[in-house]
Length: 148
Image 1: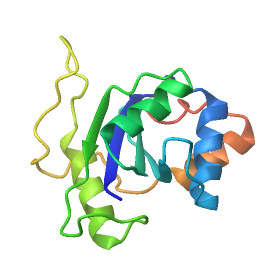
Image 2: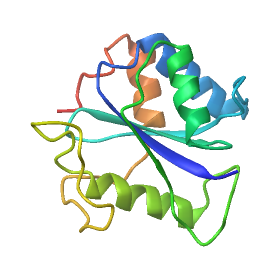
Image 3: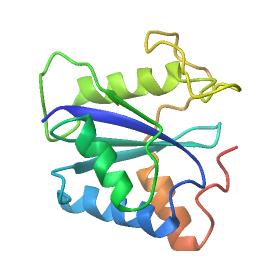
Image 4: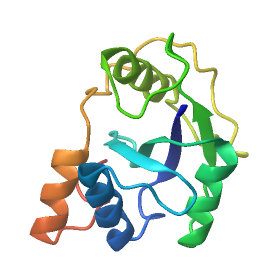
């Protein structure tokens, strides 16, 4: 299946939904829309990025709508492989480039983001948030703590 990256502002995803996403990623469980959680990233600008394998963009949006969350941006991760159910090195690198290029999103007057082709942001550490996010959730800290 194609891999997609969607973006959220910290605080838009309820804590229990972040925990459910991480559990689904660990267990390789698809939701009722066929979406497979793969990874979760955060950056220093208080944003969360979900990486999923899904039949299409509509399935990603439907999965978010089912939990009462608006999916502000969904983009297909462009790699040489047409589809995958796991993140390989190529997909991970593409996801990191996309997140780095998103610096400045959301724009002040709307939700238009810069082009996906951009320089790697020096503030982006390039690490998956799954370990960090899981630790925060176990410790009881809010997901938005320590991301800004």
